[in-house]
Image 1 (cartoon, rainbow, N blue to C red):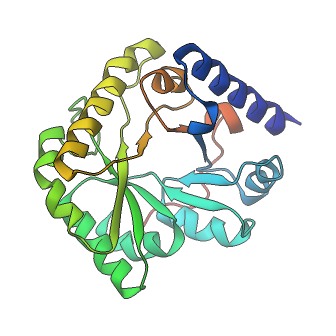
Image 2: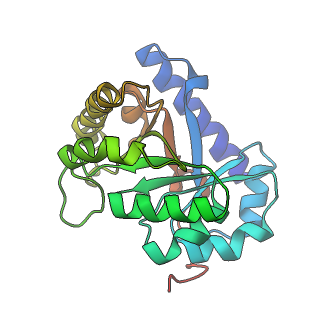
Length: 233
């Protein structure tokens, strides 16, 4: 079965990367990025033991999640619009892409209405790419205490997407920068931020070497993306 083989291959690559840098493979969480893939494919992968999945679009997730096994957990990893916050809070166990105080406040408001506490990651644009969403590092640090005051949010850590390069090694400085930023953020908060979500199909081994605790893998697990299931309104 191709999915099982792909999952085993990814898990072995995680173990090998951990061996290189003296880390425990159990400290790495694999998030299967299932955007554009149908519920049947997700079900098949879940039968291989993968229970954590990530989606990029709220509308697509809203259509898919009810048709997937109830035991699965879901993270939102795409850019979140304020008018999608209520659905995101309802559907997901973590939102990884909080990139402004305004969106954090909207998530907090919706979580309050739903009597729910929402674990989040702060997405940081460490490379300063104009084409990408994410906090500027210094602004994130400046707003951190204000973010931390939001009673329905739990800040678990940081997330980043480095500039695309066919050479995985070129992602290393961005992963290293996010790890250093995490240390600075922990100093501001006086509390640990245990999650560093960084690394995708092409560069997750480098990310692990630089301290990632969660890798977001889509293509290497599922193969090429399928036609989009649902478009964002």
